[in-house]
Image (cartoon, rainbow, N blue to C red; front, side, top):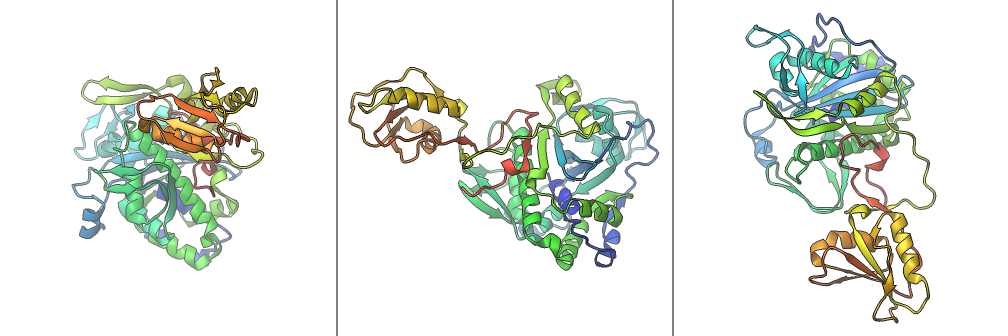
Length: 458
């Protein structure tokens, strides 16, 4: 998950920064011969494909940081995050594809880097390829699975992640629900927060916030990466050569990269991406066809959906966007709510003598995505002045989401009401406001743009 930092290095190479400013940065990067003796590789397509991996290296973490951010234990020397970042040929789009670490994979034949023993191709979890054969086997396995040719390799650890976030002054993250994870120590109340290095690391590492585990964590990593891009491109760092140099030097000291990724590549790419922003980026996770796919000797894995994943990797090979461009919305932006309207069942009642008001409210809520009964009825009290949202306290988050769609409405808890919320339309009703879930769709394969997941102004 620390791999999100590496893209910031790419984005920060911007605004005509010259060799004089970046002199010596190449020597700060640890090099790895990631493509040594590779044969029978996929054909090259347009654009640039960077394989970014996050390892659990923590050699430079202080004892205080280990205790505070729950970073104890021995590193496994494996990759717990793997991403393909595709930079389009015109340098106007970045497509980020997360590859779950527990993905079912099959390695090509290789020599074990520890024992020197030659192995035939065999099944394993994708993140285990690094421990067995290092960056080379990781790249070969990913290319074998995706048929996407990898042009560059970047590897980031805990240290570089924390340094990057801190030197940027923190990254702004929004959450409509409290986030608490006893494993990482993450404890964020609902609201907007500027996360510094250690807290940001907790945010992207957390796996025990809900039942979605790694898939949910990858979604937060993508959200964080979009926010990181937003921070880097809006803070003036890109326009200040000296500050850019300091940021880059702080980051590169704990990054490993292939031998071909250097200052010239950063400059060429950076100059072409001067106007890069969150709206220029799109994020997805490779579509999963089967959860809990059991493999003898490997354990429970995630098996990719063959048809959907092939379409995804076809798009990368052909340098095409992962999702069709969305038309610019008219009017105010939808209000972000904690629960998707599609999950909220609503019964509408007309609390006035105005004929047809119940149907009008029901239709408007249904058009916004709420699961109305489509059978509005008259309330017992027909002199209601202020619209009421009645709800069972067990469904308080759903009630807040529904109330946001009815500006000025009153929330009224009713114990034992059950899962169906009730709207009693009052004389004050004017319209239903547009709302959307704060989090993008959870399903693997869903594509979101960076500007859809960064904090808005609302």
